[in-house]
Amino acid sequence: MTPLRVVCHQLAPRIGDTDYNRALTERAIRRAASLNAQLIVLPELIQSGYVFADREEAYIASETRDGPTLVLWKSLARELGIIIVAGFCERLSAGQVANSAALVEPTGRLTVYRKAHLWDREKLIFTAGDAPPPVIDTAVGRIGMMICYDLELPEWVRLAALADADLLCVPVNWPDGPRPEGERPAEIVRVQANAAVNRMFIAACDRHGEERGVRWVGGSVIVDADGYPLAGAASHPGEQPLMAELPLAEARNKSISDHNHVHQDRRPGLY
Image (cartoon, rainbow, N blue to C red; front, top):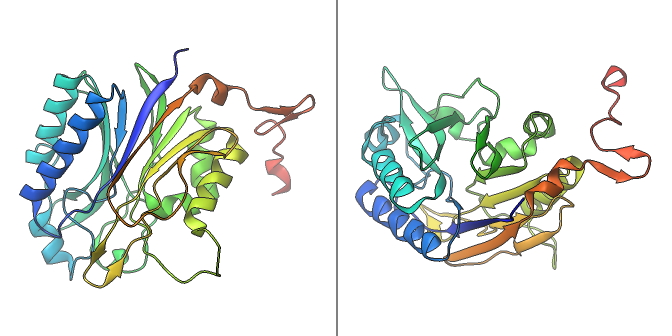
């Protein structure tokens, strides 16, 4: 199985400026394709920005699945032969919105996931999804998808792993917070732990900068199936494209010793 070349491109969208944000994503996607990447991950809500004042403001910036942003991503995926995973503010009915992510394949197939676990004030704005994280059989491997805070619920990550995801793609917006001197952001550590306990590659793409008083970790990271970073894994204050080649076949070997298997050793009846 040929290694998969993946890019996580850390960007800073402008709140509510969907034209600017679309252009930003197009530039990043074209750059990834120029590097012969087969898959790109972009941040959470890259289409709209994140720190909305209220649901009404989010609704104005939201788009349906046939809106201009997803139309653009479908066109780029087809033109460039690249899989795109990126976040957008999805317009629902009756003034409702979802914090969603799209996986767009060159074939035109679109898979949309709505964030199931909402963080902090997201609960005042977004309608939570109620479907498990999708795992899609693509031309390059089995790709799972979830969004940001979903990663902190180990049962949710396990669902994708038990569905045989080789790679979990995660658009994130990690708000920066205090931590002990010399420590790396805990969000990055949790990505590494989730990868290791499931023997699964994870690509998490964060944003950078400041939006309405919120600063972001800028902690984009790509980790291998043992949880070790292949790219990123430190807070970075600006735009950065991270690239790594992932031998996805390694994720299909769940043995960690002659007598241990990370999934078969589970004893759910005791939990």
